[in-house]
Image (cartoon, rainbow, N blue to C red):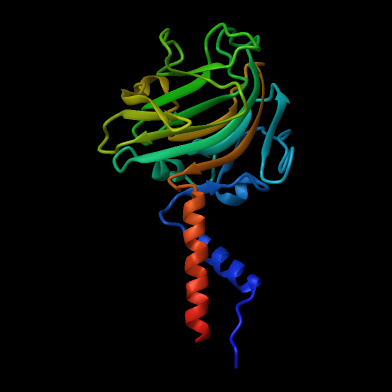
Length: 252
């Protein structure tokens, strides 16, 4: 009797392999509610829209509401989730892909341009923020890392215009208190010191979204990954080939 392999069985095998993570971590692939992937809603991202403008994208519509998604040991009901993922002794990485539409100053903190920003504070209390350069206009999309709110010297400036960009922060572990920053695969910062704990929240936290203070931001997120690598097309092809091989072996 001739054995056949259906397309559906191969697809199911690939999906089964893809559900087994290579490492621990959190991966939001842009589809549906980010909290279903292990992220937390921080403050009030109530006006964000899931699967908008298309399936697999998270839309931060033009809003001045303070809120976003990430991990936060301050407000959640499960302490130390953020500290476990952003462990300064073991090391960690955070990567996200975003299309920044606009970000502008608000009346609350003029000059800080936090309509769209990233706050990263690890288990050691060391932290960094990414937001628009001070005194930016809404038309400018030059974003920089800062080691503190009162730090006059931005570091790691990048141009967020032109559509989607991939941002990645890596911490080497060993309580080094430094980060590497990559923008679209290019290294911008190498072992750069993070800000001291005095300017932080005192709890581990990652937040991507609107920093508030009446700033207005608009952006579209493709994915958010914490200690979980994004499968490359070549890796997916290998998974497909492996699934086919497994199916053949099982059929014969």
